[in-house]
Length: 414
Image (tube, rainbow, N blue to C red; front, side, top):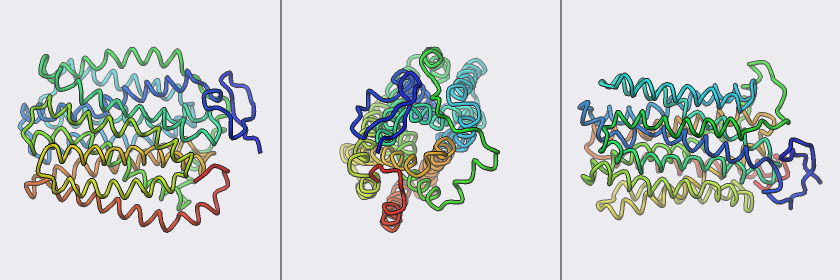
């Protein structure tokens, strides 16, 4: 049976399951969504690579360091729901433009005024949350152009913008060493402004957007158990990814005495692995099903994170972190292969809700690692608890997979 979709010119058409991915959809919008997401994620986790230097300047405790890097994650999580609503009300392109301007203005103000207190870092973290909330805009901006059989790949490629965390880890510590960490906040405005202009030129809203609803109707999916389950699964996969991306610079400097620059390189290697496989995770889920892919993801992530808790050498810890990030990145793409199969008509708000859950998972991991270090002198208990959450997610998925496969009717493999 043919599937309705909208081609690159906004004309209605039909696509058989064998239609080439690159012949469907709107490539300029897909590229714009990726660029927006990439630079937004770069600044979303910016406090992580800068944390060792900020903590030294402001004399922060381990718990304060953990909360500082976790605050943008929590703010981004909550704002994703707001952005999900905006996407369905005013469209993803305009929503993205507003969000980008808020982040650029906030970073510019922080650079000009300076940050000289722990409270100041938290305030900046809230502003950076708008960058993390880009998730709820970039994914529906791209995915609405593509038919169901290509949803995993489209959302995976747009979602690969989480590779921006690599840019932060690679360049922020070195620039801070040369110019001071506060200057990095101003320097970040330059690429953000360039991408904003490219976004305004290239991005185009798909013509098949659902009609606006009453505000209360946007939360109808929360009456469905499947919505909560998808949120929980993403809280583990994306929560693990972004929580580690924000926390690893602190871990490497505290645990192994690395310089902030070297810790940034180690973090970049780990984050790059997780970012690279996100679209592969979506493609793999398209081929073998998101459920089967996720089950493998949780097993590998749990084993790797449990191993990190007992790692005593830098090469051992680094290898386990790369393995964990490969699994979690694959899981991120897999969850968002499943979301549009179950909630196609509510993809905007569901992207926001699921993304919010992922951000909350990241906030928990980043803040709990700081608390574990302060209370026990070690990060181990934080990693072990999150490994346990991966096992819990695996058991839950095993219980619901049969019902999902018999009750979902999108026609795509789950």
